[in-house]
Image (cartoon, rainbow, N blue to C red; front, side, top):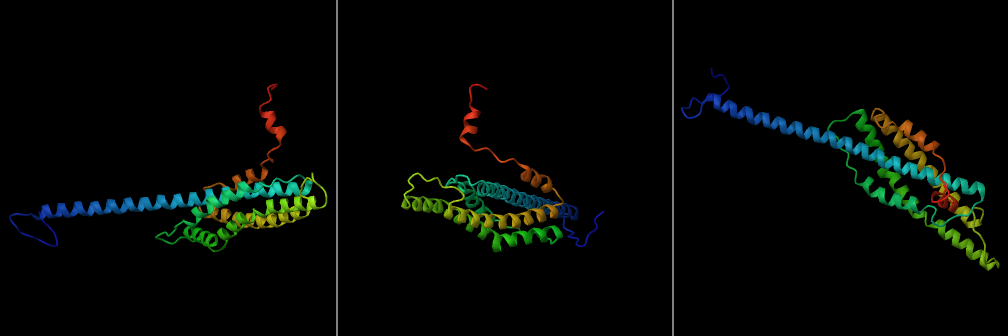
Length: 231
């Protein structure tokens, strides 16, 4: 039986044949659409995971740097001029990838709107502030060298520069304020991102581990102890 909107009634092409062709083409289009939708969903999830991992890594490095600075200021310890080098290099590597984020979902939802707000904040202020901090880290070795020069002018040839030294202390305090401000902002981003993604990243567990992490022992004695033959 041949039923349709259009009957060709040709002895060369039957309506059944045309129906089969058009059905196959329609099915192929549906498969292509379904594949593209699936790829889009997977890409969206990848962007969300990438955003979380990058922010969480920066947050951990900022926390570590802040802990080191706080301990130095409290204990008046010797300050290394490369104290913040790793933090600075990490930021310089991550911010270009954050700038390249492209998050434009087809359909608006509470989840997509929350993530869009986070990315908008990153683009408008936070990435620039991170880049500014990375550049400002150079002022710590400048401050240390200035204190060394001042000590030499005062006849102290073997002066040890600590967190109590004038310029070094000021630089540490200024950098600490920048770091604490960024920690607070990125913590908001991570909390909102985790909430928008239905706690899929388990941020509450991760942030607790980061907060409870012990201070690593970077002393020369600790290094030697790893290779102590008596153990």
